[in-house]
Image (tube, rainbow, N blue to C red):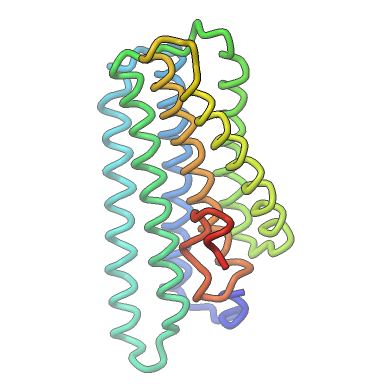
Length: 224
């Protein structure tokens, strides 16, 4: 809904900012796959240490670049600057930056010795993380195409997924597994939950007014 006011502007600077947002999402998709490879020991965690840190720094760098571009855009256009659009891009880039941080947290689990390659539910967890990677790609598509119908579907599915991971996380409280296993699973489920929440914040820009952005990661009862 935020973008409805700005269709057809053809502003090259705004187009460049959107390309950077797409770049950020592509990089977080990459870091998620790297973290997953480490967690399932497809690659030794040490082999990914430098690449994942480099990718995380790249996301942070692009976020800062977007902020600078928005300041320049505002300065150049003055009173004619599209303030709601600028705030929207700031909000979106911050959510994507947080996704990058969380994927690095997932790698940190692997670096700390968490190995999911032999756990009984390995296939289920692996499929869940693969689905999460697909969600990043889908969020990028929805944003780029201003797909309002796709955004609504994404948000509904996201709420269901968040409920599911919240339940899985809480199950670890009563788990009979050793503390190391229970805690690592709880953290992983929490990380997946948070990434979904931040992706939901990104796609809300397509269907929500400005004042309702950036809090879709709150519990459903706290949104009203």
